[in-house]
Amino acid sequence: MSEERIPLAGVIGCPISHSRSPILHGHWLKRYGIKGHYIPMHVEPDNLERVLRTMPEMGFVGCNITIPHKVSALEIADMVSDRASLIGAANTLIFRADGKIQADNTDGYGFMANLRQKAPDWDPTTGPALVLGAGGASRAILTAMLDAGTPEILLTNRTRTNSDALRDEFGARIRVVEWVHAGAAMGECDTVINTTSLGMKGANEFKVPTKQLRSGTLVTDIVYNPLRTKLLNEAEQMGCVTVDGLGMLLHQAVPGFERWFGTRPEVDDELRAVVLG
Ligand code: ATR
Image (cartoon, rainbow, N blue to C red; front, side, top):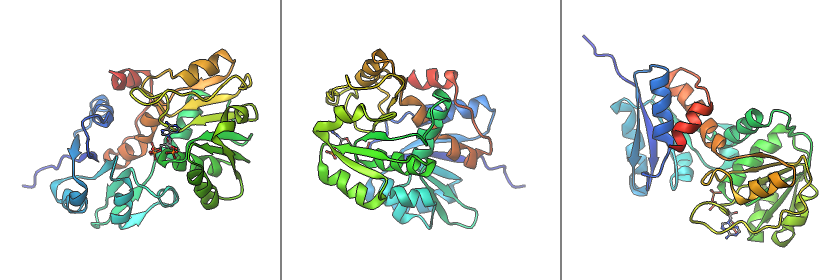
């Protein structure tokens, strides 16, 4: 008699102990009464491909990928979604029944879903929007905003060559603004997005001046530790609509969970409280 196989998923990173994903997926598994497990895995870069190719035999249906493996995972995958290809990195893998590894990137989806839930009146098709930062998170957010129809994006970054490179890649709707003019650019925009690590616990303070923000502007931060960043507190005082970054982390996990375990999970206040611990 063949034994029922319990589906396994997990998250691969190096290091991995800081990841909140096991708490998040563990909560959903329990809440929906799903027989399954979600496991954190520390994998060194040299071992990534071998581990990924072995996982399906062990009962894994897929996994999340985090730092530093997001670009390598995309290269290893046999099939890549359009959005993962545009972003140039994978955060979600699906191990298909035919043995192929399918790569996706749900960071941009998570960003948009968080804003749609927390600021339902926000309209991405009004612009311009200001994006601070030109790293991996910025790539995902630019892809999502351009796809949603944002007419113009002002992009500003400490290292100008990095923002210029993104403008060259993503095209005409992006205008690069010097980092020293980031504060002034806030006054021109309907949406302001911090994708840098500034303001995160243990990182440098967010020092961009916010006094030119207009009341009613949507201001959001990808930093969620602390939940209320200096940028969000100052923006709130200026009469802006503010959305913290925790929801992006929670929503980016939804498509993977649904693919692996067959239930589309909810992002709600109970989940937020569980993940914040
Ligand atoms: P992620 O994948 O989370 O986006 P990343 O690729 O390392 O991380 O990008 C970090 C972003 O934060 C970059 O835009 C970086 O600016 P640089 O391109 O100049 O490195 C920005 N950043 C990090 N520390 C910063 C600081 N002290 N001042 C301004 N920007 C900073």
